[in-house]
Image: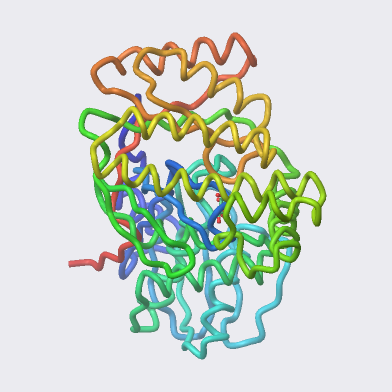
Length: 387
Ligand code: GLA
């Protein structure tokens, strides 16, 4: 099973040389993430428990003095330019919009923007529920701040990235992805309170490993279904007279059930139970209880499948298959849902045959070849200069 990133800084430097000639002044690397537990809780002010992965989005950049930003995307084989001194305008070049959205968010904060040439490349699979967008946002923000010679804290990076995605790209995402991509640390998972943004690092239980199982299924309605779930949670809050679902208890929900539709009731029930599961999962890690952590992951999948209804056939099939292997302590869909990936907690003692077992059965069942990776958490977004 592949563990390490496919891209290195030498690849980024080479790509820059090929495109623009000469070397970049610096390069930035930001990892994607996998969420262990706590799904669709972030925009409800709740708790999440992600860790970074060893797949990343990279940018190599060199300042230019005419205020233009020119970016070549290696993955899309496409180069786009815009003038950072003029009014920024939205258009259809979706990958570039994430970068422009970050420029806009910085402008709104009154930060100076200076021009640069850059190459962009990454090995975080897109649409796989592994936060390739957030990794690109944090990478872009770090590039702007390095060129502009100012610093942005991890929390500031997260807030700016989320703002770009909410208000420029138009996805009403929460703050989990940008926070972990900016603040993640090697070998650790991060418990985040998405209301206060307080966070705490945890070691994974001794003798376990985290596997990411990409179903290679992507559903085009994912963004609109995501925004719909967000609205349904807000509807539940209105019915319960609270600002955020984080404040609701099961008792309050059942007492207020008459004031909401069945669908809204089930959405809220997921969020409330998931918040409890994340807090229990943190205790489980504290006591090194891998079995309990796995059990909570299984319960989380049930709730996402039946109450929140963001799973799909392929995710359910992958979860079922993974759980049948002897090394699997728990498995669930991860990320926004409607395709993408499953995360599984494995006991390393018997994990040797896991990837082959899952891959074969998933192919038999769906006809698709999955991407199976064992994850190693790497440091969050970082800038490195030429020495
Ligand atoms: C996407 C969003 C996150 C979060 C998850 C679901 O990854 O970007 O903010 O809401 O979905 O937990």
